[in-house]
Length: 124
Length: 106
Image (cartoon, rainbow over all chains, first blue to last red):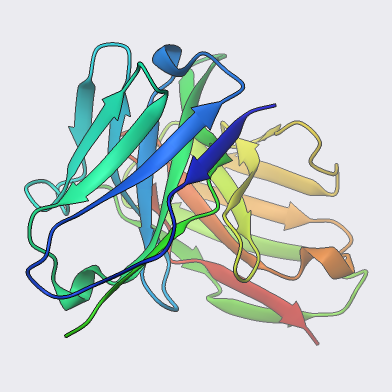
């Protein structure tokens, strides 16, 4: 069974750093991209970044490039998302999700398994 | 960036109704179009990928269609457990989500 287990809720002050995690199990971690999706309170879903744990190749949404860092440790099947200096506007739920490919008439990709989310609250 | 626009933003329907949600891309996404369902306090769940392929274990009342820039998610007979927010997502260039369509009980 594929499982993505995320770290617990965080309460931080503006300017603090943070690293949240997503531990994968039930599949070969190094063979699937894994990504992070933000959901601000009462709002929709925003893709942030993906990483291929096998070679640490990364892709960032233009909206989030330079704002966060995605990383992975394949020795412990865990992906991370980190901030060096949080802002109040970073308050949101953050989901990790596994990216899968389907090879049909094209190479379709989608997020097929999701973690339960990590709630990050940034407030002074 | 490719922009995704869903309509309507919300709708009210009865159990048993046929419901249609539309998603329009700002450029051709070549059927690289996925649909997700999200219930309050829960992570999104994949329903449809590649515009029309049903994800494993998703009921057949969910149907995806479309091509080019215009796509549709249809729920052929709305069930109580289908009241949720639905998002389209393009994976042609990066991964952009639509703003969501909330389906609630009439």
